Image (cartoon, rainbow, N blue to C red; front, side, top):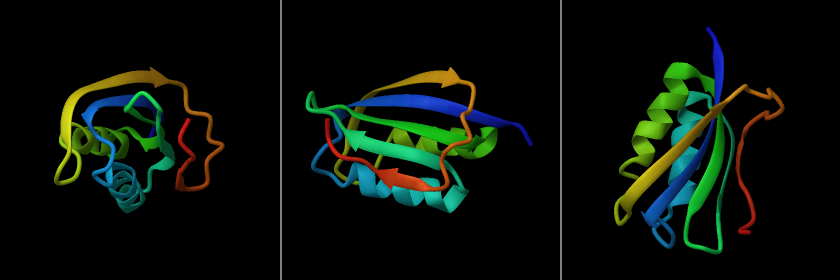
Length: 94
């Protein structure tokens, strides 16, 4: 199965609603690797690598997010996977 990489930026009410922790659960459940973090501008961003189906399922989840989130926009930038991630992690806010 071919592997894909998606860089994602999610805007709206996506901080303070456990978005990163819930996204970590969604990614791990599907075997997606990469990371997620908050940005100081209120955006949540991340990198997802895995099978096209698994990555797409996490991206579909991102369009709604966890309870309490109000997602306004999900920007996706498809790239060639790096294969350098062994799991999924929450990174420090930038």
